[in-house]
Image (cartoon, rainbow, N blue to C red; front, side, top):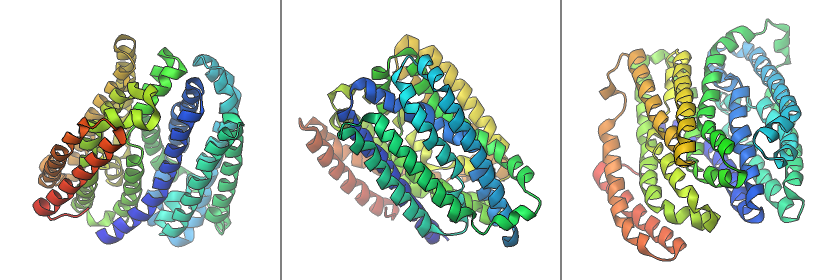
Length: 470
């Protein structure tokens, strides 16, 4: 099973990695092409609006498709897809219209007049992405991985070109965002033609809206509020500081760009796998989940150690000397990285209690918002990053407790703790080998040689100590 599992993760991850690379490449280019205020506005559009609105407005329908599609008889899947697609289309249209009409209000609230000119064209992009959000669970659950990969690669390449070239040619962000609208509409049209074709016969049957949404809404709220937990610190900093300062904070207040893509791929494939094997019982599901966490930990533990040590050289080199203030928020966000080895929410949902995922997310969001509002005016922007990291640890502790209750297993049997400790030990050996290179004066040389020494020692230790290969 695991070979097939990781093959699917690799295929899905390649597409998501391309998407992350396109956004990161555009961000690195725009940090140099735009003024600090314009770049800060660009970051606000993506971080304050896109990232929370898309998971909020998808209403948990993609996660519900992972659950229902394998359990639905083949002859009834058409009406399931029509119901899911129609729900997302209506939600996307409502969000796009609301964001377009309310853009003056948001622009005024954040004290950024330029924001309105970008939000209006960007509203269509957000709406179209919401309306086509059913495509990943549909293609994964029906094992059409190559089509999903091709769609992701084409969208990613087009996105990078559209964000960079119009700005470079002098048309500004407004011109780039208008081209972004055309891209989103074209993608949505293809997704709907391919994903819903042949499903129209489902309209003759009784819709499945009720069962779908009863399962989806707790997951949708969980996903949306989870996004808000990562978003709320950016919103709080934007309330207290101008766009130029908020932009620097948002460059650092992020998870490692490619890691959420990899983890999202694992989570998507794991959701499908857990639900396909639900009949084997909780212990078997936890075993699959634990083996996946051990493999993911072999990537995230060393990455955490290396980036934490070299962040002071990496961010100013990548974005410019004006972004040295992003280092502390970046390190605080890195503190959450070891927790990402395991995908807790998909297991809790597959065990039949998506409402517990929602409870944990609500606690995370409320605590994060309250602590951020308390700290930011008193200690500066980095207080919001500290609040986000601290509340994430408390959130994970709650989810581990929930998994213990639902599976009937003790904490000691949930994860392969000894194997994960050995992996972390190998990472510490790699870190020791890389630290001498921090003293080099040339940032790129320091980072490259340090990464090389770290990688060689870590992989050798991993092979000799654990018998594992990356």
